[in-house]
Length: 249
Image 1 (cartoon, rainbow, N blue to C red):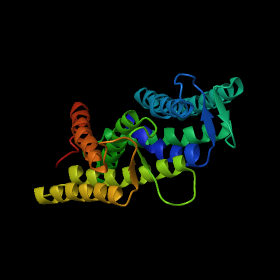
Image 2: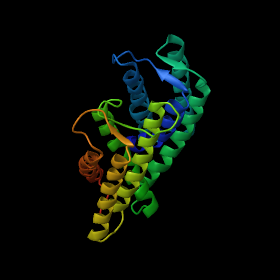
Image 3: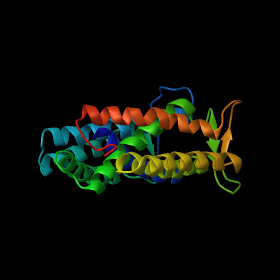
C-alpha cells in the first residue's frame, strides 16, 4: 500500500511542488540543488508519508490517533521550515495537516479494499495503476537524474523544468493507463499486443515531434519501452508476494 499512497501524492506534488513553486527542500545531501530538492520530495512523499499511512492501517489506529499523526507532521513541517531544511513560498504548514488527513482517510479505504476477497474490477484496476505508475516513475527518476538523459519539451513559453515535469506526468499517466488495462483486464492476446503497439507508436510520436529530447547520444524515446519491460514483471512479483490475484485474469 505504501507504493499506492505515493502514487496518489505524486500528481499533487507535480502541481503544487514543481509547477506552483509552493516550497523547496534543502536536505544538503546532493551537490546539485535541483536534485537535492527532488530527493527531499521523494523521501518525504514516497517514503515517510506512505510509511506512516501503512502504520496507521496496520495497527488499526483510530481517527483520533490518525489526526494526531497528521498534527505531528504539521509541527515537523513548521519546524523544518524554521531551521532552514525546508522553505515555504506560499505554502503553509496547516495545508500539510489538511492534506495528510485526506491521504490517511483514503489510505483506510484502500486498506479495506485490499483485504476484500472479491474486490470490484474498478478497485483492482486502480490498485494496479497505483502500483505500476510509481515504480515506472522511480526507475525513470534514478536513470534520468533530473534530465541527464532526456527531457520533455514543447516550443512554447514557460519554464523548461515545469514543462518537462508536466509533460512527463501526462506521458506517465497515459502509458500507465494502457499498461493497467492490458494486464488488469481479461483480454485476448491480440488486444494485449495492440496495447504494446500503441505504446510503441506513442514513443515514436514523442520522438518524431521532438517532445522527447535526448541530452546524450544513443538515447531515444523508443527506449522508454524498456522501462515498461522492467516494470511489469516487478509489479507482477509484488502482487504475487502480496497474494493479490489482480493481474492477467
